[in-house]
Length: 182
Image (cartoon, rainbow, N blue to C red; front, side, top):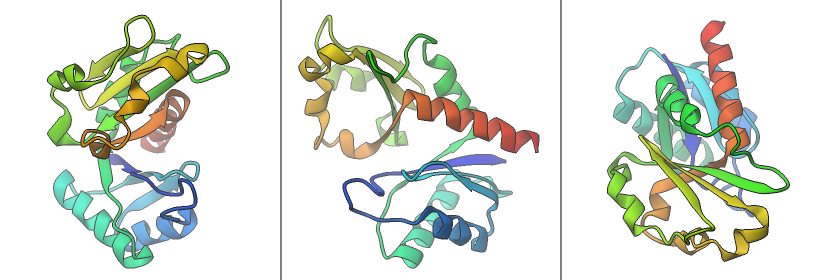
C-alpha cells in the first residue's frame, strides 16, 4: 500500500526542525520501504504492508519522537485518500501570483461537513469546498488580507489540520502515482 504521511508543524519558522534525509532513514529503519520525501515541510511518501492506519500513525509518531525528540502529529493518507482530495480541486484553483489556494487536510475527528459552519468565511472573498478529508480554500491574492480564514489560526479546528498549498498537493499525488507504478 502507498501512504503519504503529512507532518504537522515541522520546519516552520525555525521550530520543530526535522532533517528529511534523517527522517526517511528513520522510516526505513521502522520497516517502511520506497521512502521519499518532498520539500522540507514534512511530506513523506512510502510503501508499507501494514494496513491499520491508526497503528501505523502511532508507530510513525513514535519514530519521530525517538529520532528527533519531538511530539509531532502525523496525518496518514492512503494514495486513494490523497487522490480524492486532489481530484476535487478545481483545475483553475492554483497557488500563484494572482490566487492563493490551500488544502487543509483534516484529522478524522473533524471531517464532518458541518465544520464548514464554524469557519469565518467572508462572502465574495473566500471560496471553500469541503471534500472527504479536507477543506479546499481559494482566495484572490489581492483580497487575501480581507479573508476570514486567517482568524482560524490558533483555534481548536486549526490544531486538527495540516495545510499544504494546491501546487504541493497536486505534486504529492504525481509522486504517489509514480511510486505506485514503480
